[in-house]
Image (cartoon, rainbow, N blue to C red; front, side, top):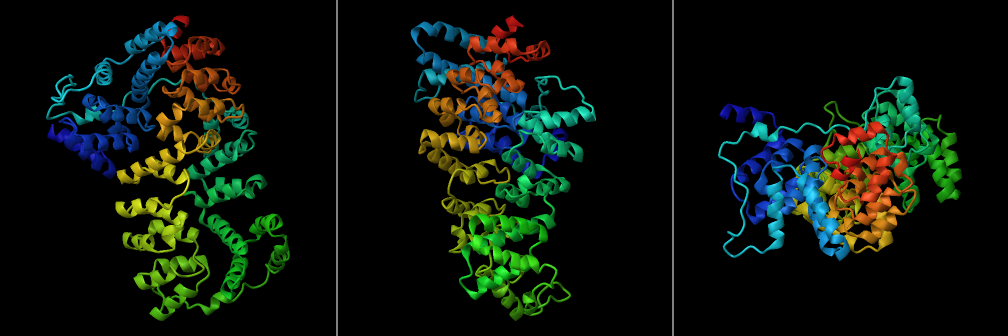
Length: 594
């Protein structure tokens, strides 16, 4: 058993090993209140399917509703386990709706609850019973009024507990397509996930075909850029005029991990130049910085700067033309006044390095000064007027813990939203500093990014971000909530399931939009907390007929009204019906139709 445990520990990554030790320490006993809170945080934030499987196979943890709900909502939980847990969530949601339903509907609702309970896995039925008892009656002071699942033994088989379940059968058959068929599919598909897959494909022809798809959107392009490891894809997007001038796409190209360094530098220079032109040349130093940026600008970027000047500052068009006409001339000699590096790669003397820290205007020189081994040079560079928040944020991930803490304590930079957000994601920043910076982050997006980041280990920071997200959402009116849900792409449903999915008025108004993103409809159709009225509204949405995945999720959701399920079942092909009949989660009423 010791050898087996050693082999299992050796198969875990470093981050998984840290979390596994916490789980193994708590597992043999009943968790305390603080341990339940810790387990809930892990259930929601862990990205390891094996550890999530281990948690899902510990019944006395599932007897605590926050842990079960966290596992069911975590997209990293294996799908087979997540669907089983979602059925338990749906069971209690239907029980709650049954209590509120009119007397005439109670019998039908009760029958649906019994049918759903009969479809639960045998190991989940005792958990559901215990949760129901916890809701039905209060625990006495002795704590002995309820039976608990048996505690695990002293020497569990960790390998067997963490083995992933067999994947569920696909919802629809996926025949192997020839190259020509895939090209046609890439140009015509209406499914965002499939289109995203074509954009991320290593085949250049498939990527170009996907870029010609009429349903491609700015949001989809930005998602593809953030995930693509192919340098040629960035050049393809940059070469298209409809994406070249869009600032969100340009920012996504620049910030993507797979972006070529040369392209990222070109875009960064343009963004710095535009920002400097917006601020104006109030001082000689700012004027010198603008001239320096113009002399470094690539020829291809003059189109974007000209486009910006036409919209924002037409009086600057003559300035842009002046520098464009002199592209062939020798570059400005401003940098010649700066000291040269020595053979060892460091500045020859402290005086010269201090001079560069305070006077440099070029991005690569400022970034080099920020990496200087002398802390005093680093502190002087933070006061350089040419240092921008974007420049500092791009350098932060490679700085050590001490310098990150110095920036976090800086009077100016700690209040900058971009720098503060990047600092919070720094892997070595202390929890106290991250909590202090959290108050400087405005809006929903920074909180969502914190909850999404698997590298962020501070659970208290994630809890505060979740509370901030909840407070902001609850303070919005219906129109603002709809906008937030659409711009977040459904991420709010993942992090605030109770608040979002019980807000029936907002969901009904959002679903009434005929141009709604199919991805949001898919999340609503799949979630077992979605109100029945909203599921019925989705069943009549015009997007439904073009997306078999949404129809399948509606049919697998036990809360979908019977009439709507029967209507959708008739729209499926025979092959799709047979595929759904293989799923153990298909409601019994539809199985009889099949």
